[in-house]
Length: 301
Length: 246
Image 1 (cartoon, helix red, strand yellow):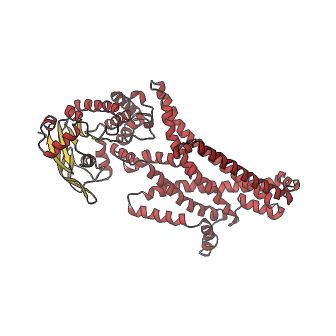
Image 2: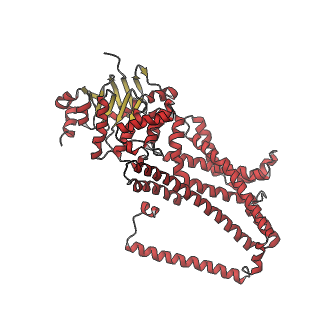
């Protein structure tokens, strides 16, 4: 509801009819594509029971489960390092000290531009020649951290930039030091603004781990790949793997919504407390637009 | 007469090629209420913001309570803690409740214990008449309420001087009075105030002196009575005829 209302006029009768027609057409096309795919699979025997029943076996499942654990471990470690590091670099980019700003700027521009795959090859093929041979896990995780730190730094900087200048000035006018203004006033509000985008970046980071197959790190994709070598059940395996990724990312976006709602609700609860103290309960409708204004951002990115 | 609390001497300030302040001299005595008026773009807000160094100056000196305005770091932060500032757009901390807005400075800058700061903040919110909103965030308050919380936030630091940068310009008409009432009360209690405003009623009622600025210069300084009835310069008379016409 929110995105439509904030970004566009509510559609009129003609618009509503067009939207209905477009919706119907889209649904038809998608249904046709799915039906075609299913028919093709069926014609080629891909839907045959014996091609799916093996996935009921514990050994198959355990194989994929190990892959999922590998994915979550790599993504978790990468996220735990790159989120704080991204915050640090984001703050460095707005430092008053020019060399600090410059250093962070070079880092961010460089690692945001270099393709992740190229970095992984550098750690896989380049650095070992120079005598730097990391364990397989880190050959995957370090490049992911390098790239995501750069992207997150830009997000943090953008979030800080989106906080009204008056907030800085008010903090300074009260007598807070620059660091305190950032920590106590600006960052909490900047983070609130970028929470949806941060979660989006987390899903990107998770998908980055699929490059694990390049370094032979046993994450979900690689494990699926290994499985097909023995079973030749390509389509079935990759469909299952794809579904797992979709489910994880759905869970992450649920997390984003929950975070967003929790932050929004906290305001209403506070207001409710005040209402008990004699204030009017009109606050709720004033609170919503603020939450709504945030919501489209998550949907746009 | 004792030394002025705020002394502004020979201050110049440019934004690029635009000179916003020309050779400004202005003293504000302890307990005095100085009202700065002038057309928009005359430099009155810039002057106000220079007093706690939210704007830097190119030349000249600003002295507060005998000490020159520090240029950076801890000393500047300490000075700002002694100078209350109220903004046109309120600038309450958006993620904090009214009470937390008022408490933040005393706790984080002065090191006051939270319990003590809370009591003091409650008393201040009561004084400005928004104590029933202490747990509301700024987005849940009206403009007038927000500005009164902002005044309480500034007062919580027990400032030597209060700066008001067009405090009522962003308010709906019916809310202007509630903010002005608080300011008149403050003036009556002997607070030293520098007020940039278009509220001529406030200037007459609470101002000790009126400073009229035009094109970055102080054109006239006088008592409100004389300024409003018998302005000396053509520019001031022209300005007054425009704003007092209706």
